[in-house]
Image (tube, rainbow, N blue to C red):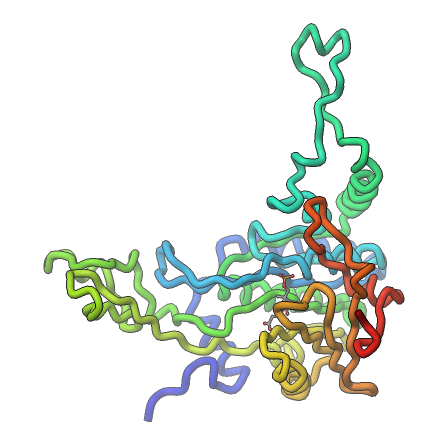
Length: 361
Ligand code: PAZ
């Protein structure tokens, strides 16, 4: 009989197999030290602390990674939600995909909202004309918005309310999540887990991963061993191109679902756990969100569809009404500088800027 896949084992066994297979991320000890100091500070202040996870995890195809599988998430939901939690007085541990959107700076990043478009050179003064170095300033029309974002950012930074911790791969994410949950135990019922990251569902176990860059063409016999070395990666003849080029067939295992372990083991007693469920097929969304809630017995699943996620979500709860849709009406959807519809925080939507789904535009 074939050995069970780690993603199919019961949760405690999957945890020990999975975490023994991977070396912990190099940055973990530093992140743990930062998180301990952060938690101690906020325990003393009796402040609520939320762990927000944000952005997508990668699945490396090689141990010395050249190629990896990724997903669409830019971290908009996580970064936006973190700002709203900060506004509500929470301290935020922001566990995010490296280089994805961050709270506050997200307003001025990437090509849709490039910070350079908000800036101008000040008119030359007598001094600057002489030196040739005039000041740079924010354009008049963006002063108010930028001041408001800057003040909130400064407040969070100066008051130690925001801890930024990056991850890249799915295994780094798992190690970080487990450590942070355990470090948050002293927070008790003041702890909240808000799991908005898009975590890979499939991966190549470390034991079956190629060490080096997978080769796309035939190597001389004396070099073959060092280049491939993965049972999982089949580089067979490419029938459509009968040359020495190879097909790449990748065999992925299911990633173990550690939400069980978070709810029943890692997280502080009495804490609240909110997870997200993303689908593309509208007919599956509520079913999948309900199934997740029943399976992991946590507090809330927020369901969203890829195409409408920026203005429509469904809250699935164990208690009445079990299913509640929140939609931001068209007129309230904020626009970025380029006119692209921006993410509106769920908190904003819940403040009343929403209409029931059946009455919406
Ligand atoms: O990062 P983003 O704002 O583009 O997307 C957010 C999201 C859709 C990844 C998040 O809301 C979510 O649903 N996360 C869970 C995904 C899942 O594993 O089902």
